[in-house]
Length: 183
View 1 (spheres, helix red, strand yellow):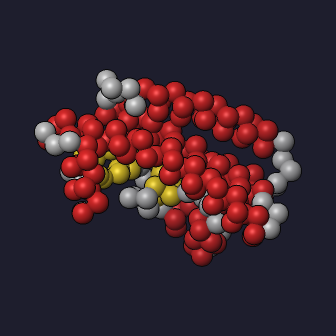
View 2 (cartoon, helix red, strand yellow):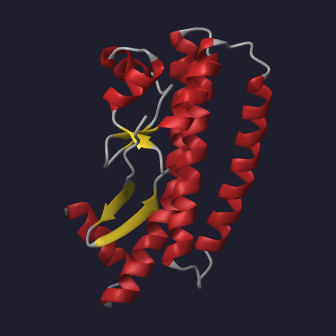
């Protein structure tokens, strides 16, 4: 199958955080064909956080979606242990990248790595909650907790982006934040 490559970006005013996407990013239609599902089912699984999508590109990481669909289809698979190990490793990496990005000398490249690592880690956590929750009430409750944690993890990174933008524009981080809120 032919993949569509892409780059994801988060835009904060005129400051763009580019995140390199996987070389095998595909459209929803291509993902549906690959997994033997309908486009409607892909949308349902995306809404349920089984699949995650690159927000600015509307593309899916094919390998990641294949893995998640296999795990979701067999909730007792021994492959879950490897997945849990990877999420634990991703958590350690996200912490390391965030520490580097939040240092006074942290660069835009450090910030990009941190944002990508945090988003990837939380995407996997949301998937675990969606796949392993017993009831919708349990899913909603636990998902709400993790969404608050995600916001708490992203806030210092956004502030660091404001600091970097401020250094480039001569504005204070507070002024940059106000401009972003107004945009």
